[in-house]
Image 1 (cartoon, helix red, strand yellow):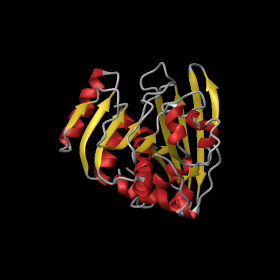
Image 2 (cartoon, helix red, strand yellow):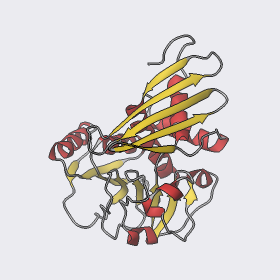
Image 3 (tube, helix red, strand yellow):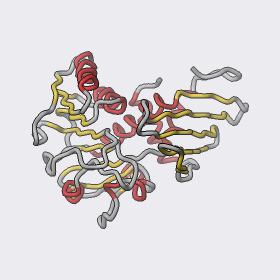
Image 4 (cartoon, one colour):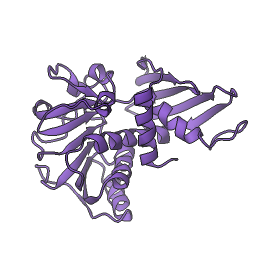
Length: 281
């Protein structure tokens, strides 16, 4: 898979140059939901199929099918890995554009696949001084700490009630329906909230949302993100932020729910070196 920085730049290009991607369809299935996410540009037509079944392990499974339009070649890409990396790359792009502080500690709430991807992405994009993590599963917390230390970063479990003052980057990557953060963060924190993706889910408490400079990945987040329901202040989509528009607040909250545009950007990078007539790796 490409580097996170390469994926971030591909997402930037898609957002600024444009592509076709309707809002995803969400259909009920026994025990969960089935998501259909299409997108297309002048070179590729893509569809990601996702099942979300909270009572199963893994809870989320995905497949990505891509057709290269110039030769009709069809590629089947690893959906979970593509989603994991492009989501973290999206947060990295937003942080490199919007984070008030460019160096400091990273705090991750939710040490699963997305948490680890964000650890890798922010390590690639910023000089991190240390890493903190909080999670429910002991094995996942230990695995996350081991991964951070393998990257050469001091790492420890966050057990306190307040976010430490040296935290510059904060990531929530949980499926929690209720807030997982306290009602205050240090000034100038960049918070990427990527776990909750439905109106009934909220990782970030309302008190924090009121104090934040608010950004989202696309306008669809205004309808899908629990944190943004009923918000009366402007929420700036990332594309507009890349063009220079800014929000104001005590810290930066970037709310991401995912979009097929970002899968298209990742597929562009993955398939860039795929020879004609052969499957991509």
